[in-house]
Image 1 (cartoon, rainbow, N blue to C red):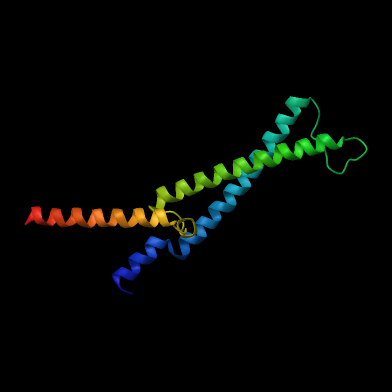
Image 2: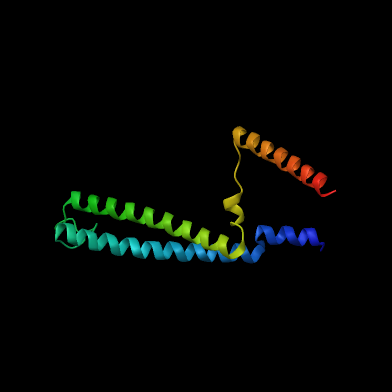
Length: 135
């Protein structure tokens, strides 16, 4: 395998990077779920003074309590999951020097493409001027 092909594999993360990223995502999701559930339960107990409502206990729990607790826990879960995913991506980037491949692959808007071309043109111009100064 040539050097440029090997560099391309390292830049994309390769198969090991993909496995590591998937493991980090599963771990961060499990951690986020656990934290969100604990926080939701404790917040509910502090705010209402009652135990967490159980969805299947129709005789003892009011529907509004079940709905309110479900909304609270879903909101906390979503927020902690996003925070955990962002931290995992930040850690991955700091460890490998790049983001996971699927996070980098995005479609650019026309404005972004235009700005990219403008930056490339300016970079080439600066390189050319630097070469002229060096010679």
